[in-house]
Structures are given as C-alpha cells and as structure tokens.
Length: 67
Image (cartoon, rainbow, N blue to C red):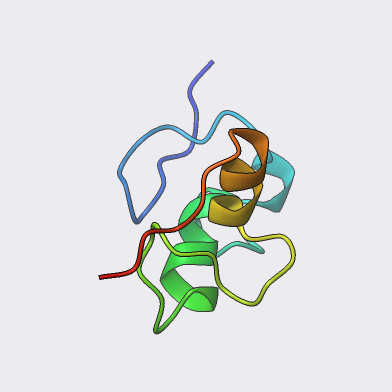
C-alpha cells in the first residue's frame, strides 16, 4: 500500500488518512505544530487541551523547564 506523504515532515501518513485533506495534507501532529501551536516552543504545551506536547508531558510526568 502506498501512503500519502505529509507536506511538513515528508513522512508517510499511515494513521488518520481519512483526515489527510482536512489536515492540509499533513499528519495531525504536524498540522497542529504548523497552524495551531504558533508562538509556543514545540517542547512547551500551548493552550489547546489536545496539544501533543501536553499529552506527552502528562504521560511521562515531565514539567516544562523555561529559560
């Protein structure tokens, strides 16, 4: 099976292919960082409760370290 390619990271989109067009031909995570995470460091959770960074930090019990 040939997978569509994410415009942001250039990797195959294997999950959420049914939303490929909705997410501007990107992975959902790539779409989030490209359009919804603006003004935040990728390692810093943004205000979106579905932010992938927030989910990973909660999963692994990591607190952000701000310099």
